[in-house]
Amino acid sequence: MGKWEGFFSNETKGLKSSEIRDLLKLTEGRNVISFAGGLPDPSTFPVEDIKKITDEILDTKSSSALQYTATAGVSELRKELVSFTGLRGITGISENNIFVSVGSQEALFILFNVLVDPGDNVVVEKPTYLTALNVLRTRKPQFHGVTVTDKGPDLHALESQLRKLKSEGKKVKLMYVIPTAQNPAGTTMYLDDRKYLMELASSYDFLVVEDDAYGFLVFEGDNPPPLKALDKEGRVIYLGTFSKILSPGLRLGWIVADEEIIREVELFKQNVDLHTPSLNQFIAAEAIRRGVIQSNLPKTKALYKQKRDYMIGAMDKYFPSIVRRTKPVGGMFVFAWLPEKFNTTQLLQEAMLKGVAYVPGNSFYYDYSGANTMRINFSFPSKDEIEKGIEILGNLIKSKL
Image 1 (tube, rainbow, N blue to C red):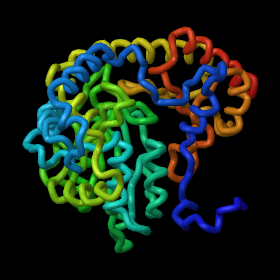
Image 2: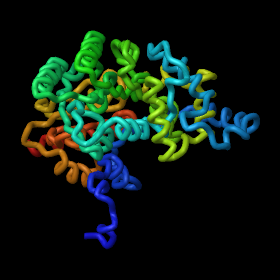
Image 3: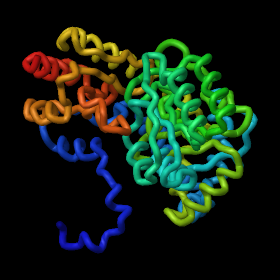
Image 4: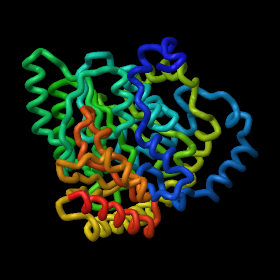
C-alpha cells in the first residue's frame, strides 16, 4: 500500500492506465520498432502552412487568439466546422450544434460523464477503442458487447440482445460505435447496416455516440455517410477530431449534437478546463478556410494505403497462415487473431526484448476477452520498420506454435 493511498478517493480505484501510453513510455528512447501507438506519419503534418497561419494570426488577431474564449469554442471555428462536417454528409446544423473539445478524448470524457450513471445499460463493440472503454468503466455501467465482423458490428445479434433486455424490463441508454474504419478492427459498416442501426436506436429509444476519428481517412472502397447524416431524431452525438487530419499536438476535437446536449456538455466543461486553447482553434479555423486540411488529405490517404498494403504483404509473408487478420479500408491499424492458446500480453514481453512493440488486444474488449488478439499500427513506422518488425513478430509467433 502506498504512503498516501488512504487519501485517494474511491473513484481512483477505477482508473486504469492506458496500455498504449504505458507502451509508448517503455519504447521511448529504446531501439524498438513500435506498432503500438496510433501516431500519424509526421510527414503528413502541414508544417509550413501551420507556421504561416500562426504568424498571421499573431499579427492580426492576437488580442482574441491569446485571450480567454467561449467554453463551446471560438465562433469562427464553429462556423467553419459546420461546412467542414458537411464534407462528411452532415447537413442541417448550425454553429449552436457544434462544441469544440480538447481532442475527441475530452469529448468522450465529458459525454460519458453527463450521460452515464452507474448501472446504466451501455452497448459497445467487441473490440472497440480502449480509451473510450477506460473512460466508460469509471462510470460503472452494465456493459453489453456486440461482436465486430468484417462488415462492422453484428446488428442481428444486437437486436436480439435489445429484445431480451426489453423483455427483462431493462432499457439501453446508449451505444458507443465507430462505424467507419473502426479502431482497432479497421472495418466499415455498410450503408444498409447504418440505416438498420438507426432504426434499432429509434425503436428501442437509445442514444448513439458516433466516433468518426477516421472518417476522413478511408482510402479504399465506399465511404458511406456517418450515422449522424442519417439521423432524423437528433439521437446521434457525432465526434470528430483534428488529430489524424491536421496534428494531434493541437489537441482539438469537436462534437455535433442537439443543442440541449451541447448545453450540458458546456456546463460540464466549464468545471474541467474552462475552454479549449484559443490559439489552436484559430489555427484550425484558418486551416479549414484555406483548404489546408482538404488538400492534404489525398496525400495522407495515398501514403496510408501504401503502408497498409506493405504491412499486409509482410504479414502474408511472415505470419503463419493460422493467424487471422483484418484488411482495413481506412484508418491506421490491422487487428489480428492468433490461435486460441496464445496470450498476446505475455507474448509482448518477448516481442519487446526482440525489438518490436504492439498493443495486446484484450484491452479493446470490455470484458478483457480477446487474449489472443493484437492491434498493429501501420501509419507511423517506416516501410523498412514494417518489414523488419513483422518478420520478427512472425518468427516469434511461429516459434510458439
